[in-house]
Length: 141
Image (tube, rainbow, N blue to C red; front, side, top):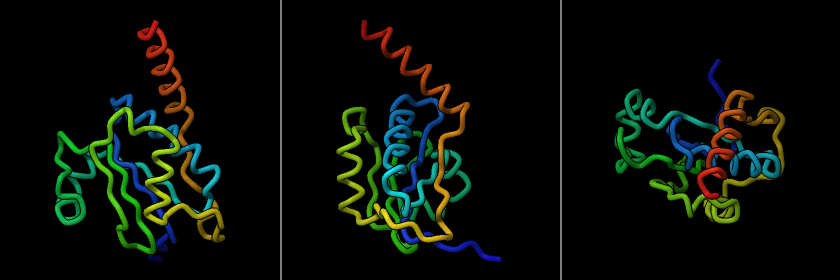
């Protein structure tokens, strides 16, 4: 059976070793609690580039194996609405990310039954992010 296309999705292309990507994950987790009608998806950016070269070349030509990550791709009804790549630490702020996604018209509060479940950070990722935040606090002191 073919998978259904969610009415709205946000794809986060991430680097597993990036603090910026971890911060963006936290931001998207908060948005996911409010916008339950939107599917939030994470994908390893380098792996996505390697395994989907034709699609990446068409949709996100500025993405390479070494640059363009983190990136957010806003998708509505199966069509890419907007792309934001090469995000900086300053851009990873809930209000800024929410504004970008609202402009792309992909943040939906109404939940369709098929898409009631949304992606959550796994416990081991949560522990890693918490540790990274503690390390950041130590560096800032």
